[in-house]
Amino acid sequence: MTVAPTGVAPSVTDMTEAPAVLRSPLLGRPGAVAGEGLAAGVATHYGDPMREERTLEEGLAVVDLSHRSVLTVTGPDRLSWLHSLTTQHLLGLGVRQSREALILTPKGHVEHSLHLVDDGATTWITTEPGAGESLRAWLDRMRFMLRVEVADVTADWAVLGEPHSAESAEGEPLAWRDPWPDLVGDTTAYGPVEGHPGRQWSWREVIVPRASLEEAVADRPLAGLWAADALRIAAWRPQLGAETDHRTIVHEVDWLRTAVHLHKGCYRGQETVARVHNLGRPPRRIVFLHVDGSGHVLPAPGAEVRAGDRVVGHLTSVGRHHTDGPIALAVIKRNTDPEAVLLVGDVTAAQTVIVAP
Image 1 (spheres, one colour):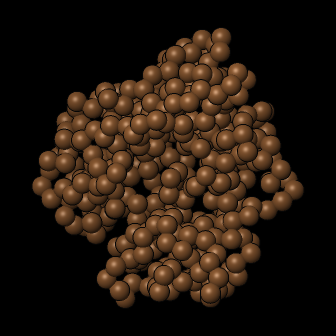
Image 2: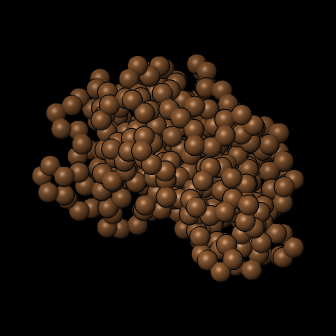
Image 3: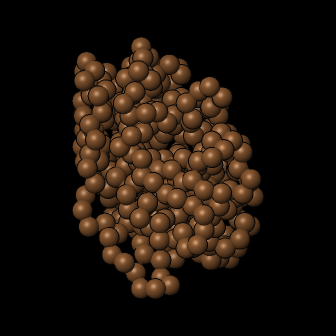
């Protein structure tokens, strides 16, 4: 990791080597097919993605997310310190109460997504795969004289995804509850509030000892990443590294609703958040796509999205939904005609507006 000059915060994403991939013991289950890259340690599916998706939607299955990074922050100043660094209001966070927060660059671009839950003595953070050590090092540099300690505990703790919307109760393993698509605190929505498909989305991340993953799953059915991603896309839920790139601002993907408090005080990137919210419009907007499924192969994330002959954006996430068929999220130019039928490669895609142009 590079060290910034005195008084300049180093980038959270500066890394000199790729993080190690931890292989989950759940890959030994029948039918398990491993993912690729940072997801190589967990299963994309267990032989029947459509059945897994239905079981997950019914609230019965569990998803192996043990490729996610897990950090802990201890010390009496932990919540006020994290409050000062992130987009979310964290002062007074209660025991087992969850929050979503973002770390932005100085120019307001989304850099990290933090899923936080506090147990009364420790703030637990789950974040994107492979980011644990670089995030820990950056947070360490931001401690100054405050009474906080940061640790990357990914080697010892793992995450399981469950289709439940309740905070964890005393006696249960600690869990982060996803607030999507509720408006959390003093914030706003750039997409619809009433009739939002995310109202059907229930999700939490349970933090368990890595050595006890199989015991924590027990006899519950397993669903892979493909199943979870299809339901996330249907809920219009943005994900870091999928719907974001190096220039994403929160307004473009309707992320203020759960992760940004608009009047909590200064944090890195706040000027961009406030300026775009008060004076302007985001240059791009996220859309939901119904993709033509007559072919056997779906377009891949990153594929160009066109309106006629003009490239207007790119595909960010794609999946096969058990009732809606091929669906996707894309980020396109704000002024793209909301009535236009878009093309992804040679495949047509009907857009549903999320962030209004």
